[in-house]
Image 1 (cartoon, helix red, strand yellow):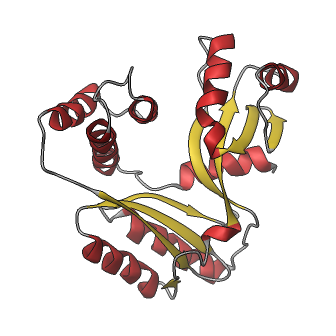
Image 2 (image 1 turned 120 degrees about the vertical axis):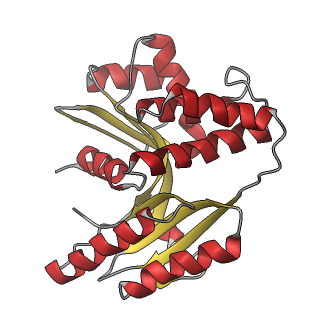
Length: 238
């Protein structure tokens, strides 16, 4: 399988599989985006991006509106972004992104997940240098030539472009996210991206033994059960 397949695997393997966790995840993200800027998605690009992602994952309009109303109401709730880097079974590495109202609690809970599965947390920078922070789009219904045309006409650079039966996947610098998305929607207003995210992509994949795969599955399950965990990225080849 090529890079496009791995991109979709990363998207599917991120946490927030359960509906209640999904709602809580986006409720926090929408609230913080609305609170830190204008609580209007038409005037707040970050808020608009998160709402679009939430809708794609079938988060209800009620959850979205309540999070925005909470920000408008001047709630005192505040969450801190925290990123933890860890080493899992075998040669696996992890980036765990959290939103928390208690950093001490969160780091203890995340560390416990790694410890229980034979891994450990690393210091800041111990893992992230093995990943690229990228804007990732999978575009259905267009040929590779049509995708290239949009990028060239708008003077946009891509790190990787790969076509398969499900569409064309474009990877670029995270800072290019808004420009690339705008360029494609200007050209194709009805376009719906299969993948439309900024994510950490591992430079080198790790293959696990069956025993390590069981530990990996348990680690992912433990992290998924933590309320403060928003996203988990890893280098495991599935």
